[in-house]
Length: 175
Image 1 (tube, rainbow, N blue to C red):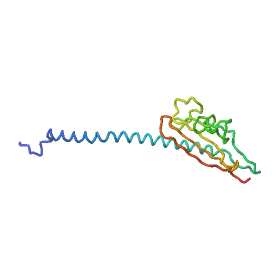
Image 2: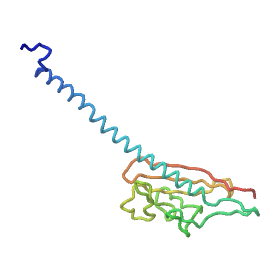
Image 3: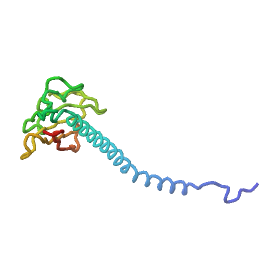
Image 4: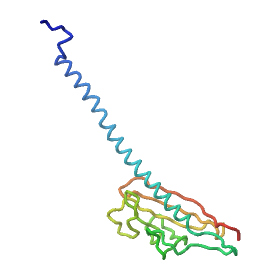
């Protein structure tokens, strides 16, 4: 039997050219794969930091800052929100130190692991900490004693961009 030209398979030159093309394509894909893995990791870190900042801001907003039925100002200045579960003795919505967003002030900072679980509040930083949260409570200038600015900063321990959130709360109810 005679083999036809189309039944002979690939020549060595054809295989070598195919391998060269494949290596060229893969060489270009490896840096893109590395960049995409890094981008996904950074996005996950930023998402977690934003979630942790929003969580702390909501915890602060949930503290009592209102007028009672008699028109008397009621303020939670006793809850320690730097603990999980919350502690009974802390600053609550009391005014924070001026540098509370830059330095870990007692009652105004805590540490969270990479899964978002609270791991401590005091320095030295726990070894399992992946994020440092700091927050500040300040009265709004010119608004009397009825409005507060709440700020939260979350810093990834391993490096990356900080996430900063801020809101204003005003006492509920009528004086």
